[in-house]
Length: 112
Image (tube, rainbow, N blue to C red; front, side, top):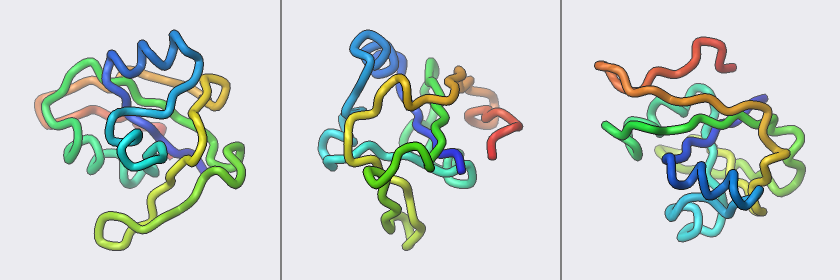
């Protein structure tokens, strides 16, 4: 199963420069890196990134993250993936720009 992370341009640039990250400010505050499933990503974008341009969508294979990935209840009891270690560049399967369209962010059609 793939899990997804959305970064703002400055967060993405800092991650690329360092090769690892503890995440965005919300991740640092909560003590883990927040991810979403394909079915949760659009709601995450709408709730936390509404109207923002320059976003980057990162995809990771949940199975390769091992015991550091925990599935925990969040919005209305839905389980969300949370990573309890630094996110590393080598964890990524791919990254793509997440453009802002007239109806919100435009996610890739091949998200699974």
